[in-house]
Amino acid sequence: MIIDNIKNISLYKGLGNRIAFALKYLKESDFTKMEDGRYEVEGENIFALVSRYETKAPGKGVWESHRKYIDVQFIAAGAESIGYSNPESTRVIKEHDEEKDIQFMEGSGNFATARANTFVILFPDDVHMPGIQINGPEKVLKVVVKVRIY
Image (tube, rainbow, N blue to C red; front, side, top):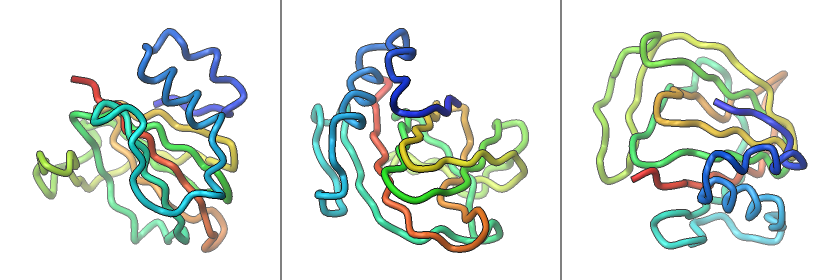
């Protein structure tokens, strides 16, 4: 897992062209003018999911992971806590859904605060729990860029 401010994207060029392209897209786009939904960036290799929601209590969150895509999660407005863990600290409760590229787990982990202009890169071994409230419910505008790894 990587967490940083969007102004520092030049530090991550070594992660590959797709991630560099995703970070550039996040830095240069105004998501406040976009409706919620899916946006093609580079076909099935890179696409963005724009969503607005209210953060939830920690007990309402679910651990998840992906196999085909890296998540580049970007907080465009608001703030949330994002849980992170490794597969050894969790147990699968719903097997991987190949079509949706998601698997659900239960277990334990740590939490990081992501405020506006923060991005989080989550690789397949990064079990995560997004959308958790910090001090109470908060409205968030988030963009998740899905970057295909194979």
